Length: 122
Image (cartoon, rainbow, N blue to C red; front, side, top):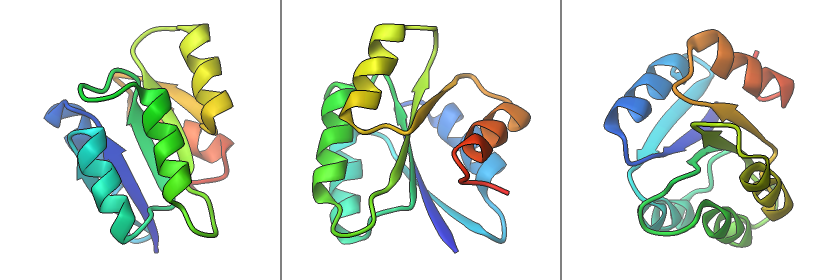
């Protein structure tokens, strides 16, 4: 079973993403802040991590770098969640190690298509 973490200060976004992704093949966990996510990932690294581009406690790029620095062995697939097209932010996230991005608020088809492009969902 794959593990997915959603890092977003919006409980609505976390709830929607969890509802979309939860199923027989995906266990979804939530973190409200980057600091909370990093602490959780020290215990067990998820396979997929959705990172809000506007985290409240640290820049998303720093969060991505820190998450990848924690991983021992297999690296998580990190997807940046953006509210608007900001090519600079997307490119910085990709240079930091993000595999891709998705616009939010997202719908079920949009989120699943983004993960499927990265070969992370069926």
